[in-house]
Image 1 (cartoon, rainbow, N blue to C red):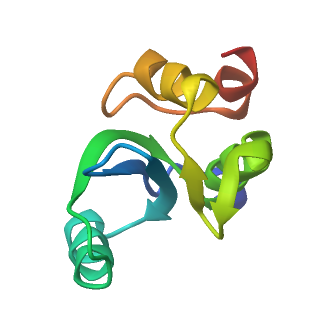
Image 2 (image 1 turned 180 degrees about the vertical axis):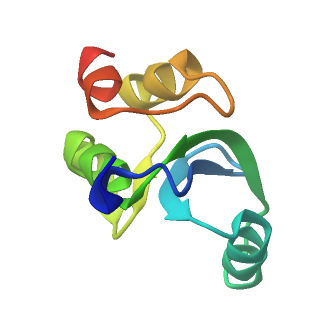
Length: 102
């Protein structure tokens, strides 16, 4: 398996307490990353899903839901995105084919 396609971290989905916004991100250090994000956010963030993946898979998701993008990696947490996140299983290995099938 090439390094570019290695599953080397988690793609995570954080929702704001008002459930209006969702952040899609990738990290190799989940707790450290979530704590850093929470420190910079006035709303409580909740981890709603995490899947095993890599930076490329995160980028594919960011592009796939571009029409819901508010800023950077933050999206309006509307039905298409909510359905996608609900269809995932925690800690499953996320592949580009699975992303495009959903």
